[in-house]
Amino acid sequence: MTFRVKSSILMAVASFSCMMGEVQAQEISLHVFNAEQRKAIVEVVRQALKDDPTILIDAMQSLRQKSAEHQQAQNLANVRANWSTISTAPRYAVRGNPQGAVTIVEFLDPRCGYCRRMAPIVDDFLKRHSDVRLVEKVVPVLGAASVVDTRAIYAAAFQGHYDSMRRALMQDAAKPDDGHLKEIARQQGMDVGRFMKDMSSPAVVEMIKSNLVQAQTIGLDGTPTFVFGQAAVVPGAMDADQMDRLLKATQGKH
Image 1 (cartoon, rainbow, N blue to C red):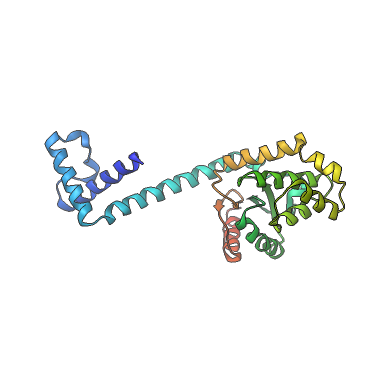
Image 2: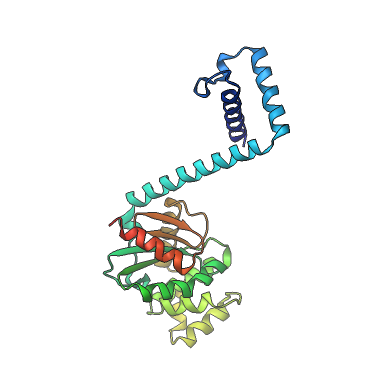
């Protein structure tokens, strides 16, 4: 916060100095002013902020935007450097066309309300675009219940029920305790004993750990987050039109 405030003040100083014709903005540096001049500058800025406080707000917004742009660029650089890992998943976690020309990676939390709202939108998106390969990365970022659900989803995968378990849990508001999970597994025709054992298996733990490391690599700040090829990292829920536009932009970069 201190850095941002200081930067905002310097930006305000530059702006006012240009307006008053006292010095050029690129020449401004507190180091070239004596104590009396620095005091005068502070008074000018203080009065300016009293007269029009939006100056500081605008400066802060500009800094935030530049920071966000820098972070987005860094996230994309990380995606490109780690694309082979990020775009890879077990066969059961790949949806759409496994040989699709465009790969989209979705990081989702099964307890996330936005992820749940996106589920039918993603389903329809894949129906409309037969050349898309969608890779799912389930990441438990919303607490203990998310961890339990994620473990259940990957344990179910060992018996061929990854998709059905993911869909069941993402439509279920009940607390994911052992009894409830056993009942879902039983309804899906799974070996319940094996399912419960697999939830704590090293393979499940390693899968979740790997997804979380990848999420950190791309700068994930919430779910869902979509990675459109190596063209864009897009956090948050979207509508169908937004997804279509992003896909078109991604296809244009292939």
